[in-house]
Length: 259
Image (cartoon, rainbow, N blue to C red; front, side):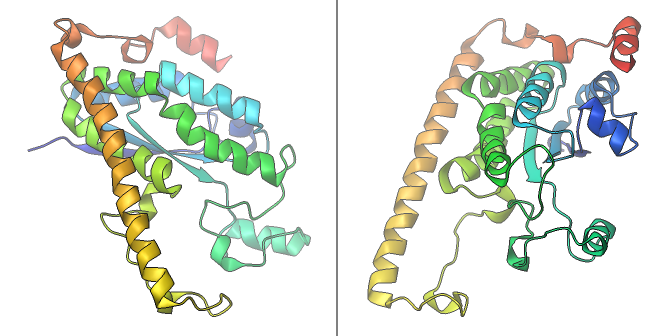
């Protein structure tokens, strides 16, 4: 019972990146066909998208996000910065090559830049990572997600809750949703030893205000989403909604994509 959730890892849809990582099968048409089959069973689709492959630029990433929004029936998207995790083959290769890598291992969390990119500065890379969250979860696309959920039977309320968690956590606290929860526990005694200790009389009042302001911001975002949900629920044509991402792939389109 309840809506099933399917998670898909998407390295890239940029043809240059696909050739570089030897994954030419990751074509948009094939993704769309697969996602539509899952949606036909009432599944909510989640995807993780990695930013920072060699062919990526801020412009190409923006274009990829637009293609995903328009052509792929993905519901929830979360973004990661390409990171050579310590102990991985990529990390070992870069180490053997003498390439620069971030010396602070705490930053290898897929949210920070830890290596140099051939086409983007560290600032550009971080900027497009930040913007990617808001580009994908734009007000227009969030409405599209809710309309698709209503029309496909996955559940518009479940979709609202998922958007609230995944985009809301980054929007409000600037944190990846995998790092957020109902209540973030912070104590002055758990700060890293390299950081100065804080006076509890200053820390706790500030922390109380941080918590209150966080939930006020979450509440405002929820109300914004709820207004959109109610407007869609009142639409008598809502169940007939369709768009390109929900349209079956034609053989000619798949051939064009492959070319």
